[in-house]
Length: 341
Image 1 (tube, one colour):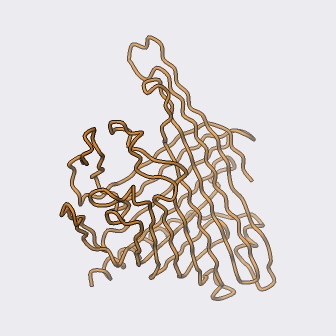
Image 2 (tube, one colour):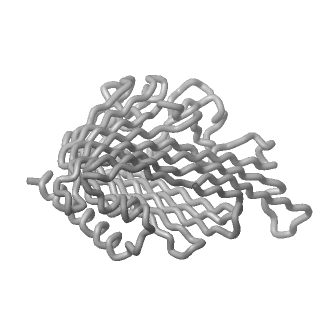
Image 3 (tube, helix red, strand yellow):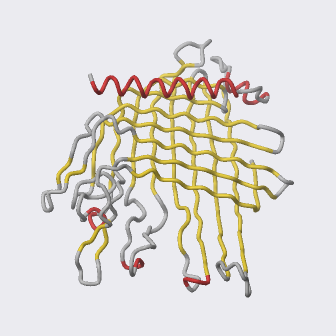
Protein backbone atom coordinates (compact mmCIF):
# COMPACT_ATOMS: atom_id res chain seq x y z
CA UNK A 1 0.00 0.00 0.00
CA UNK A 2 2.86 2.39 0.83
CA UNK A 3 4.53 1.74 -2.52
CA UNK A 4 1.26 2.30 -4.40
CA UNK A 5 0.70 5.65 -2.65
CA UNK A 6 4.18 6.76 -3.67
CA UNK A 7 3.59 5.56 -7.22
CA UNK A 8 0.38 7.61 -7.39
CA UNK A 9 2.33 10.63 -6.16
CA UNK A 10 4.87 10.01 -8.91
CA UNK A 11 2.07 9.76 -11.48
CA UNK A 12 0.58 13.06 -10.25
CA UNK A 13 3.95 14.79 -10.73
CA UNK A 14 4.10 13.39 -14.26
CA UNK A 15 0.64 14.75 -15.11
CA UNK A 16 1.52 18.19 -13.72
CA UNK A 17 4.69 18.28 -15.83
CA UNK A 18 2.70 17.18 -18.89
CA UNK A 19 0.13 19.91 -18.35
CA UNK A 20 2.79 22.58 -18.09
CA UNK A 21 4.65 21.39 -21.17
CA UNK A 22 1.49 21.08 -23.27
CA UNK A 23 0.40 24.58 -22.29
CA UNK A 24 3.74 25.98 -23.43
CA UNK A 25 3.98 24.04 -26.70
CA UNK A 26 3.60 26.30 -29.73
CA UNK A 27 3.74 25.81 -33.48
CA UNK A 28 6.64 23.86 -34.91
CA UNK A 29 8.22 24.13 -38.32
CA UNK A 30 7.37 21.99 -41.29
CA UNK A 31 9.94 19.30 -40.58
CA UNK A 32 8.84 18.91 -37.00
CA UNK A 33 5.20 18.75 -38.04
CA UNK A 34 6.00 15.90 -40.40
CA UNK A 35 7.77 14.22 -37.50
CA UNK A 36 4.69 14.67 -35.30
CA UNK A 37 2.07 13.41 -37.74
CA UNK A 38 3.83 10.39 -39.15
CA UNK A 39 1.92 7.94 -41.31
CA UNK A 40 2.71 4.58 -42.82
CA UNK A 41 4.62 6.17 -45.72
CA UNK A 42 6.84 8.50 -43.70
CA UNK A 43 10.59 7.84 -43.76
CA UNK A 44 12.88 10.60 -42.50
CA UNK A 45 15.85 11.63 -40.38
CA UNK A 46 15.51 14.56 -37.96
CA UNK A 47 18.51 16.00 -36.10
CA UNK A 48 19.70 19.11 -34.32
CA UNK A 49 21.70 20.45 -31.41
CA UNK A 50 24.11 23.03 -30.06
CA UNK A 51 27.81 23.23 -29.19
CA UNK A 52 29.02 25.91 -26.79
CA UNK A 53 32.44 27.00 -25.56
CA UNK A 54 32.71 29.81 -23.04
CA UNK A 55 35.37 31.55 -20.95
CA UNK A 56 34.92 33.66 -17.81
CA UNK A 57 37.93 35.65 -16.58
CA UNK A 58 38.60 37.98 -13.65
CA UNK A 59 41.58 40.05 -12.46
CA UNK A 60 42.08 42.24 -9.35
CA UNK A 61 44.98 44.44 -8.27
CA UNK A 62 45.00 46.28 -4.92
CA UNK A 63 41.24 45.86 -4.86
CA UNK A 64 40.06 47.34 -1.56
CA UNK A 65 36.98 45.11 -1.27
CA UNK A 66 39.08 41.97 -1.68
CA UNK A 67 38.49 38.95 -3.87
CA UNK A 68 40.27 36.42 -6.05
CA UNK A 69 43.38 38.03 -7.58
CA UNK A 70 43.02 36.18 -10.86
CA UNK A 71 40.64 33.49 -12.06
CA UNK A 72 39.62 31.75 -15.24
CA UNK A 73 36.74 29.37 -16.00
CA UNK A 74 36.48 27.37 -19.22
CA UNK A 75 33.18 25.66 -20.13
CA UNK A 76 32.28 23.30 -22.97
CA UNK A 77 28.76 21.97 -23.56
CA UNK A 78 27.25 19.77 -26.28
CA UNK A 79 23.59 18.84 -26.65
CA UNK A 80 22.29 16.99 -29.68
CA UNK A 81 19.50 14.73 -30.90
CA UNK A 82 19.06 12.36 -33.82
CA UNK A 83 15.81 10.61 -34.72
CA UNK A 84 14.87 8.11 -37.40
CA UNK A 85 11.22 7.88 -38.48
CA UNK A 86 10.20 4.73 -40.32
CA UNK A 87 6.48 4.34 -40.98
CA UNK A 88 4.87 4.22 -37.49
CA UNK A 89 8.17 3.59 -35.70
CA UNK A 90 10.57 6.09 -34.15
CA UNK A 91 14.16 5.62 -33.02
CA UNK A 92 15.36 8.73 -31.16
CA UNK A 93 18.69 9.52 -29.49
CA UNK A 94 19.80 12.35 -27.20
CA UNK A 95 23.38 13.06 -26.12
CA UNK A 96 24.31 15.70 -23.53
CA UNK A 97 27.92 16.31 -22.50
CA UNK A 98 29.57 19.03 -20.45
CA UNK A 99 32.98 19.77 -18.98
CA UNK A 100 34.22 22.81 -17.07
CA UNK A 101 37.47 23.75 -15.31
CA UNK A 102 38.17 26.57 -12.85
CA UNK A 103 41.64 28.11 -12.38
CA UNK A 104 42.44 30.51 -9.52
CA UNK A 105 45.48 32.36 -8.26
CA UNK A 106 44.75 31.30 -4.65
CA UNK A 107 45.29 27.61 -5.49
CA UNK A 108 48.26 28.23 -7.83
CA UNK A 109 46.03 27.79 -10.89
CA UNK A 110 45.62 24.07 -10.28
CA UNK A 111 42.51 23.18 -12.32
CA UNK A 112 39.35 22.22 -10.44
CA UNK A 113 36.24 20.79 -12.03
CA UNK A 114 33.02 22.77 -12.14
CA UNK A 115 31.07 20.39 -14.37
CA UNK A 116 31.56 16.91 -15.78
CA UNK A 117 28.80 14.78 -17.28
CA UNK A 118 27.92 12.31 -20.00
CA UNK A 119 24.24 11.55 -20.55
CA UNK A 120 22.96 9.41 -23.43
CA UNK A 121 19.37 8.29 -24.03
CA UNK A 122 18.13 6.05 -26.83
CA UNK A 123 14.45 5.19 -27.38
CA UNK A 124 12.66 2.96 -29.85
CA UNK A 125 8.89 3.36 -30.10
CA UNK A 126 6.04 1.85 -32.10
CA UNK A 127 2.91 3.94 -32.56
CA UNK A 128 -0.08 2.38 -30.80
CA UNK A 129 -2.62 4.16 -33.01
CA UNK A 130 -1.58 5.84 -36.32
CA UNK A 131 -3.80 8.83 -35.47
CA UNK A 132 -2.65 9.27 -31.86
CA UNK A 133 0.77 10.46 -30.57
CA UNK A 134 1.25 7.49 -28.19
CA UNK A 135 4.02 4.92 -28.54
CA UNK A 136 5.01 1.63 -26.92
CA UNK A 137 8.62 2.52 -26.17
CA UNK A 138 11.81 0.86 -24.98
CA UNK A 139 14.24 3.29 -23.33
CA UNK A 140 17.95 2.97 -22.56
CA UNK A 141 19.87 5.60 -20.60
CA UNK A 142 23.56 5.84 -19.67
CA UNK A 143 25.10 8.42 -17.33
CA UNK A 144 28.69 8.89 -16.17
CA UNK A 145 31.55 11.41 -16.20
CA UNK A 146 34.84 11.99 -18.03
CA UNK A 147 37.49 12.34 -15.30
CA UNK A 148 38.12 11.95 -11.58
CA UNK A 149 36.09 13.98 -9.12
CA UNK A 150 37.30 15.41 -5.79
CA UNK A 151 36.05 17.10 -2.65
CA UNK A 152 38.30 20.16 -2.69
CA UNK A 153 37.56 20.94 0.97
CA UNK A 154 39.50 17.86 2.12
CA UNK A 155 43.21 17.98 3.05
CA UNK A 156 45.42 16.64 0.24
CA UNK A 157 42.30 16.23 -1.90
CA UNK A 158 44.34 15.32 -4.97
CA UNK A 159 45.23 12.00 -3.29
CA UNK A 160 41.60 11.16 -2.49
CA UNK A 161 39.43 10.95 -5.64
CA UNK A 162 35.75 10.33 -4.97
CA UNK A 163 34.70 9.27 -8.47
CA UNK A 164 36.00 8.62 -11.98
CA UNK A 165 34.92 7.60 -15.46
CA UNK A 166 32.52 4.64 -15.07
CA UNK A 167 32.70 5.09 -11.29
CA UNK A 168 29.86 5.55 -11.02
CA UNK A 169 28.05 4.64 -14.24
CA UNK A 170 24.27 4.33 -14.35
CA UNK A 171 22.40 2.14 -16.82
CA UNK A 172 18.60 2.28 -17.08
CA UNK A 173 16.43 0.00 -19.22
CA UNK A 174 12.68 0.59 -19.25
CA UNK A 175 9.54 -0.44 -21.11
CA UNK A 176 6.62 1.95 -21.12
CA UNK A 177 4.32 4.35 -22.92
CA UNK A 178 5.53 7.58 -24.51
CA UNK A 179 3.53 10.64 -25.52
CA UNK A 180 5.33 12.88 -27.97
CA UNK A 181 4.60 16.00 -30.01
CA UNK A 182 7.18 16.47 -32.72
CA UNK A 183 10.74 16.85 -31.50
CA UNK A 184 9.67 19.41 -28.89
CA UNK A 185 7.88 17.32 -26.28
CA UNK A 186 8.37 13.78 -25.01
CA UNK A 187 6.76 12.24 -21.92
CA UNK A 188 7.73 8.67 -21.05
CA UNK A 189 6.31 6.61 -18.17
CA UNK A 190 7.33 3.09 -17.20
CA UNK A 191 5.76 1.24 -14.25
CA UNK A 192 8.60 -1.29 -14.33
CA UNK A 193 12.20 -0.41 -15.15
CA UNK A 194 15.64 -1.71 -14.23
CA UNK A 195 18.58 0.43 -13.15
CA UNK A 196 22.12 -0.88 -12.75
CA UNK A 197 24.88 1.11 -11.03
CA UNK A 198 28.57 0.16 -11.25
CA UNK A 199 31.74 1.58 -9.70
CA UNK A 200 35.27 0.47 -8.85
CA UNK A 201 35.67 -0.97 -5.36
CA UNK A 202 38.25 1.70 -4.43
CA UNK A 203 35.42 4.26 -4.46
CA UNK A 204 32.88 2.17 -2.55
CA UNK A 205 35.19 0.74 0.13
CA UNK A 206 34.21 3.39 2.69
CA UNK A 207 31.73 3.36 5.60
CA UNK A 208 28.23 3.24 4.15
CA UNK A 209 29.50 2.55 0.63
CA UNK A 210 29.00 5.04 -2.19
CA UNK A 211 26.54 5.82 -5.02
CA UNK A 212 24.02 3.49 -3.38
CA UNK A 213 26.45 0.57 -3.70
CA UNK A 214 27.24 -1.30 -0.48
CA UNK A 215 30.71 -1.06 1.02
CA UNK A 216 33.36 -2.93 -1.00
CA UNK A 217 30.93 -4.04 -3.72
CA UNK A 218 31.03 -2.88 -7.33
CA UNK A 219 27.40 -2.91 -8.47
CA UNK A 220 23.78 -2.40 -7.44
CA UNK A 221 20.51 -3.46 -9.08
CA UNK A 222 17.25 -1.51 -8.72
CA UNK A 223 13.73 -2.17 -9.99
CA UNK A 224 11.11 0.55 -10.00
CA UNK A 225 8.93 3.12 -11.74
CA UNK A 226 10.53 5.64 -14.07
CA UNK A 227 9.38 8.89 -15.69
CA UNK A 228 11.34 10.97 -18.17
CA UNK A 229 10.04 14.22 -19.65
CA UNK A 230 11.76 16.48 -22.17
CA UNK A 231 10.58 19.79 -23.58
CA UNK A 232 12.25 22.25 -25.94
CA UNK A 233 10.93 25.49 -27.42
CA UNK A 234 12.08 28.70 -29.10
CA UNK A 235 10.80 31.42 -26.76
CA UNK A 236 11.81 33.96 -29.41
CA UNK A 237 13.91 33.72 -32.55
CA UNK A 238 16.98 34.29 -30.40
CA UNK A 239 16.10 32.51 -27.13
CA UNK A 240 15.83 28.73 -26.75
CA UNK A 241 14.64 26.94 -23.62
CA UNK A 242 15.16 23.25 -22.82
CA UNK A 243 14.06 21.34 -19.74
CA UNK A 244 14.22 17.74 -18.63
CA UNK A 245 12.67 16.01 -15.62
CA UNK A 246 13.57 12.44 -14.57
CA UNK A 247 11.93 10.67 -11.60
CA UNK A 248 12.78 7.20 -10.31
CA UNK A 249 11.09 5.20 -7.53
CA UNK A 250 13.01 2.10 -6.44
CA UNK A 251 10.60 -0.63 -5.31
CA UNK A 252 13.51 -2.56 -3.73
CA UNK A 253 14.78 0.29 -1.54
CA UNK A 254 15.37 -0.60 2.12
CA UNK A 255 17.63 0.28 5.05
CA UNK A 256 21.24 -0.90 4.75
CA UNK A 257 23.67 -1.66 7.58
CA UNK A 258 27.43 -1.46 7.16
CA UNK A 259 28.76 -4.85 8.40
CA UNK A 260 31.97 -3.34 9.81
CA UNK A 261 30.76 -0.16 11.49
CA UNK A 262 27.10 -0.95 12.09
CA UNK A 263 26.16 2.33 10.44
CA UNK A 264 22.59 2.31 9.10
CA UNK A 265 21.71 4.12 5.88
CA UNK A 266 17.96 4.68 5.73
CA UNK A 267 16.08 4.22 2.47
CA UNK A 268 12.60 3.27 1.27
CA UNK A 269 10.54 3.42 -1.97
CA UNK A 270 9.28 6.84 -0.93
CA UNK A 271 12.71 8.37 -1.57
CA UNK A 272 12.16 9.29 -5.21
CA UNK A 273 15.31 10.21 -7.16
CA UNK A 274 14.90 13.51 -9.01
CA UNK A 275 16.92 15.05 -11.84
CA UNK A 276 15.68 18.39 -13.21
CA UNK A 277 17.82 20.07 -15.86
CA UNK A 278 17.11 23.50 -17.39
CA UNK A 279 18.97 25.45 -20.06
CA UNK A 280 18.38 28.92 -21.57
CA UNK A 281 20.38 29.99 -24.63
CA UNK A 282 20.23 33.58 -25.91
CA UNK A 283 21.74 33.90 -29.37
CA UNK A 284 23.44 37.32 -29.70
CA UNK A 285 24.59 36.84 -33.28
CA UNK A 286 25.61 34.05 -35.62
CA UNK A 287 28.44 32.76 -33.44
CA UNK A 288 28.02 34.08 -29.89
CA UNK A 289 25.45 33.44 -27.18
CA UNK A 290 24.72 33.80 -23.48
CA UNK A 291 23.88 30.49 -21.80
CA UNK A 292 22.30 29.99 -18.37
CA UNK A 293 21.77 26.55 -16.87
CA UNK A 294 20.33 25.17 -13.64
CA UNK A 295 20.37 21.51 -12.57
CA UNK A 296 18.79 20.07 -9.41
CA UNK A 297 19.40 16.49 -8.25
CA UNK A 298 17.97 14.70 -5.24
CA UNK A 299 19.31 11.21 -4.63
CA UNK A 300 19.09 9.51 -1.24
CA UNK A 301 22.17 7.48 -2.19
CA UNK A 302 24.29 10.64 -1.78
CA UNK A 303 23.81 11.57 1.91
CA UNK A 304 25.51 14.33 3.87
CA UNK A 305 28.27 12.10 5.18
CA UNK A 306 31.30 12.25 2.86
CA UNK A 307 34.30 10.43 4.31
CA UNK A 308 38.01 10.87 3.86
CA UNK A 309 41.27 9.33 5.07
CA UNK A 310 43.27 11.62 7.34
CA UNK A 311 47.06 11.96 7.53
CA UNK A 312 47.22 8.99 9.94
CA UNK A 313 45.39 6.70 7.54
CA UNK A 314 42.19 6.75 9.61
CA UNK A 315 38.83 7.08 7.86
CA UNK A 316 36.99 10.18 9.07
CA UNK A 317 33.60 11.68 8.25
CA UNK A 318 32.04 15.10 8.67
CA UNK A 319 29.59 13.94 11.36
CA UNK A 320 26.45 14.90 9.47
CA UNK A 321 23.18 12.93 9.56
CA UNK A 322 23.30 9.75 7.49
CA UNK A 323 19.59 9.76 6.61
CA UNK A 324 19.45 13.31 5.25
CA UNK A 325 19.35 13.29 1.45
CA UNK A 326 21.70 15.55 -0.47
CA UNK A 327 20.02 18.13 -2.71
CA UNK A 328 22.63 18.78 -5.38
CA UNK A 329 22.60 22.09 -7.25
CA UNK A 330 24.59 23.26 -10.25
CA UNK A 331 24.18 26.72 -11.81
CA UNK A 332 26.16 28.08 -14.77
CA UNK A 333 26.15 31.38 -16.65
CA UNK A 334 28.42 31.65 -19.67
CA UNK A 335 29.15 33.99 -22.55
CA UNK A 336 30.89 32.37 -25.47
CA UNK A 337 30.87 30.74 -28.87
CA UNK A 338 27.78 28.76 -29.89
CA UNK A 339 27.09 26.70 -32.98
CA UNK A 340 23.59 25.39 -33.72
CA UNK A 341 22.81 22.69 -36.25
